[in-house]
Amino acid sequence: MASGPREKVAAIIVAAGRGTRAGASDVPKQFRAVGGEVMLRRTLALFAGARELELVQTVIHADDDARYHAAAKGFDLLPPVHGGATRQASVRAGLEALAAHAPDIVLIHDAARPFATAALVARAIDAARQTGAAIPALAVTDTIKRVDEGGHVGETLERAMLRAVQTPQAFAFQPLLAAHRNALRERRDDFTDDAALAEWAGMTVTTFAGEPGNIKITNPEDFMRAEAMTMDQLGDIRTGTGIDVHAFSLGDHVILGGISIPHSESLRGHSDADVALHALTDALLGALANGDIGSHFPPSDEQWRNASSDRFLKFAVDQVAVRGGRIAHLDLTIVCEAPKIGPHRDAMRESIARIAGIDIGRVAVKATTSERLGFTGRGEGIAAYATATVRLPWGET
Image 1: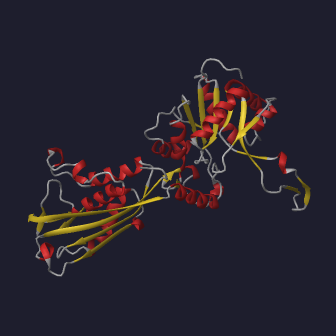
Image 2: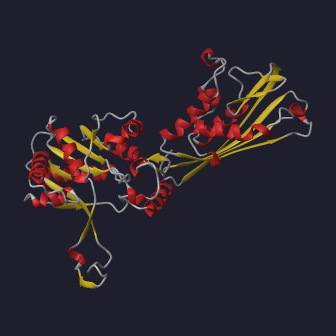
Image 3: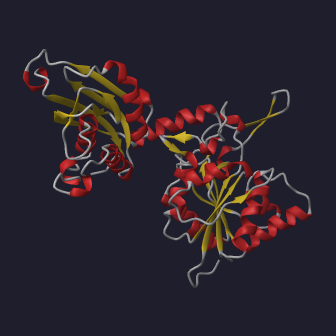
């Protein structure tokens, strides 16, 4: 394609499949978590943030409206359209939805490839501008053999001429739409990707460099590999600690770990005095080297008077997410003579896990006395000690 005025570039994210090969689950694979985040959301984040993309059209299954809206929350996307019985039909639905916007270039990407990068998207757009039809490809390193239905080898293929193909595949919009419409008229619905359909329509398809990490998640083993990849990406492990104390005052309950526990006294503080959540908040902020609870929620500010401390912890949790990180573990120790923590331990763990958005298995709550020593031993208040472990992407500061 000849260069000229800046083209309008769109992308179609194909997310209408059921993912039956991905293992037993009531949730389609594109809505399952990878590295603590819904796979489709990871994919949408890349394309919604791509500088050269003006339009992002997602194609989903008719049963997935609620799941989609949760996964796409906060992104500036076109309204989703429902796909068909095949991938080809779903792509055509996306193309027809985009037709009114008249894009010049369209990228077709599988939602089940959540590890594509901005550099790959940029290469796809550039390749489409140059050629009108281009696909990312990797050289095949294994020996490939053609076998018959009985498993007998019939031919060894020359691997120097073979490529493994990925998405996003990039095309001039109008020729691809015309090819899909023609295939519908000819009742051809057996194309496994858009490049094959484009070849059938007479278009010349070229290749550009794909990415080894741009895997398609299809089988249960792929989910295991994907989790390992996210751990490799989040290899910068940080640890923070938090300590907080609050004195007793008149009252009939205390708030600890986000739950109310009956007691002969209450804890005194500017907020709800949840010493447990305050310590956890400082631990997370410490792991991020991002100040402390007092710097973000100063007690001199009246808006925080009697505030529920889950807001403070949620703020720290969100700061981890903003940095692209994950909370690996939260460990809390409460020091007091009373009330008894043991009967409420699991409720506290559930509350903290809910606020932090992590599995309860990543939250530890312990309790001890100070053997009647110090202010806690005299029953004057409660102390809490917390440790937070987070994983951040390499290069984060």
